[in-house]
Length: 52
Image (cartoon, rainbow, N blue to C red; front, side, top):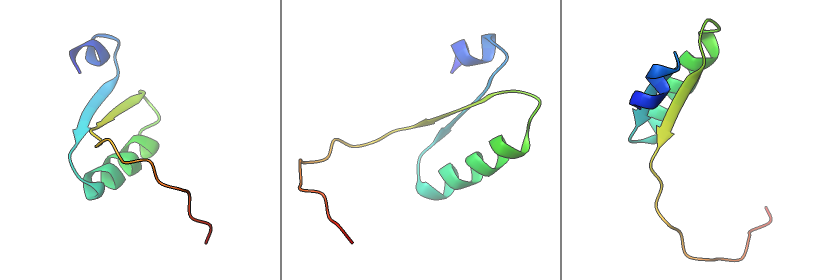
């Protein structure tokens, strides 16, 4: 996060889907500077893709 800030990029860490959506909206609305959104993920088991 500090590296992003040193380049003039806003950096945020999202811990849930609500935060991701909120930060994404804010990042799109702010055209003055780039935005980095760090999202932690969990390793998923390999599963066959679903076609819906």
